[in-house]
Each structure stands twice: as C-alpha cells, then as structure tokens.
Image (cartoon, rainbow, N blue to C red; front, top):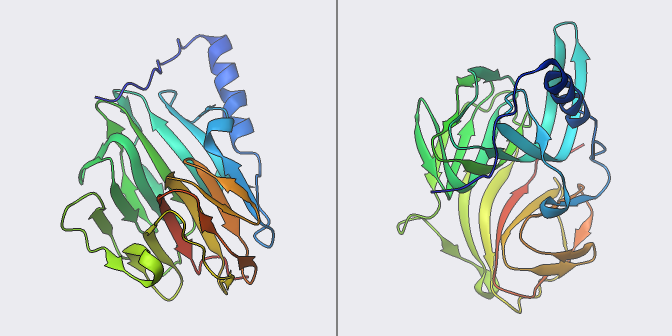
Length: 252
C-alpha cells in the first residue's frame, strides 16, 4: 500500500482562498518556448494544489490561455500525486491525456492501473480517475494530435512486454507510434556512450531509474529534459538507466 502522507484540508474560507491562490500559481506559464531546451528535477519542486484538494502536482511545463469560460490549460507536463481515497470529478481532456504510473494504483471506470502501466486517452476522452490507496503518475495533457484516436493500455512491467534489443545493448519498449510522435521506454546499460544525435521532431526524456549525463547536465530519477527539434544530444549512461522517451512531437 502506498502512503502519500497527504490529507484533505478543512474547507473554511481562508483555506479555500489559499487553495484558489495556489491553483492560480500552478497555472503560470512555465517552459513554454518549444524552441529552447528545458529541464526540471521533480524532487526540487513543490507540490501544488489542483482543483481537487487531495490531488497535488509538480509542474514541469505549462502553457495556458484564458477563455470566456475560464482557465483552460492547453499544454502541461507534470508529476501528479493522488492521496489515498482521492476522487477526481469526471472531466474531458480536449487535447488528450497520457500517463505512466510511477507508484501506487490509479483507477477509473475503464480499470485499475498499478505501477508500470502506460495509458493514453485520446482527445475528447472523458473519465473520473480515483485512487483507493494512493498513486503517483507522470502525465502529459493537451499534447496529442487532433486526429489521434487510439486508446492505449500497456503494462510495461509484464513479463511478456515486447522489449526489443537494439544497438549497443540498448533495449526499447514501444508504447505508441504515429506520424506525429513516438513514445517508448528505453533501457541504457551502464557505460553506454552514444554518438551525437539530432532529432528532427525534438526529444523528451523523464528518468525513471538510473543516471546519465549529457551536455545539459547530470540526470537522475525524477529528472525531466526537453530538447528542441534539430538540437544535438550525446548522452552517456553512468548507471543502468530506464527512461520514458518521446520523439517527434516538438516540430515547429
């Protein structure tokens, strides 16, 4: 059972005002320029409130605009934590949602998703997520192509997961592929040093396990890195490393 050490705050006027201020701060634009490299370390960030007090988040990137109906978050990448017993009201993801369960179990009307599950809900999908015992997820909102209609549910920890061995001992587990993006888990063996690479559609990495270094720094579990389209990248794995990797989605 996962212990999130998070409790719902009492609903007095002062608390409600503080929650509203935190939610407003949480929607501040962050790392919005896709032409520039961006990075963040999850452990160095503060938990921020969401519209549901028992669900908190650490923002890695966020771009939003205000419409007549109120705030509408158009693009976010974050780590989200559900307290035990947390229930999020039913809502629709107009720009789609994908998430990887980092710890605990997240559930909705379609099923239960323990640690290691990768889930894609295409644009227009509606659900009401909850967690009985608590959960933590890496989640991306509002970043899918409008014609992406594929629902994905993959247990990456399954013994039968379709890992493929490629050059230099690297292993990959494809999670989603389309003309617009490719998502995979990638395992780098310790000591691996890759030749300089350039990704025409950009590169995004979230470190799940291990450690690697590159021209942008030293990256350990919880590190997030976004490299713009056309920029170079030459990583070296200091330890066996497990990474969430997305490419092709940063074309400008």
